[in-house]
Image (tube, rainbow, N blue to C red; front, side, top):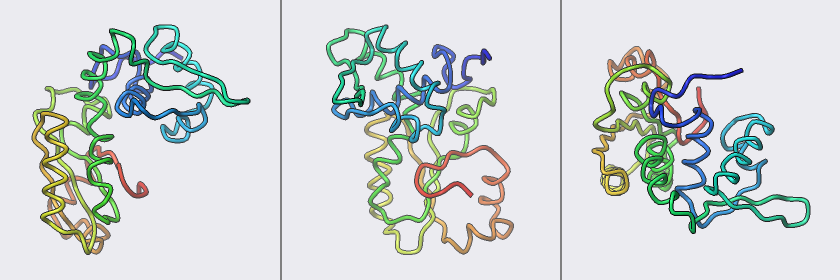
Length: 195
């Protein structure tokens, strides 16, 4: 079944391709098995395998075999990888960067909401001009949260606006207008289990 190009970046073939490139290109030193990628992306193994084969054929990824495992990684020797990495970073990469930078806060949940999340879920609209991040936790240090946001801004070249809420507030979103709005609109969970 052919899917339309993603709203977030119609230059990519599919949402899966954009997500796959974000995972692999934004961690160029790391090698991945096809199974690891499928699990991380929540996608069927055969779909990931087909997409990886296309990207290897385009010289964007390289692979090597160790035993029965096929390991893939970014092809840093390809002249197309650096500009593609930058494009991937600003389109499909924000949730990957947020996951990296907010990982050590001890938050129960971190999610991206607002215009970027809407575009990620294929809602039409203008390009996102910032990134809205909700951090849910009890013992989250606000200064550390803002430092994580600054690091993410530095990588994304996009303002990152974090907000902090307690797990109790998350469990009763109708008592908080912001949480109530977030729950009605698309968002992307980057740390913690989706509800």
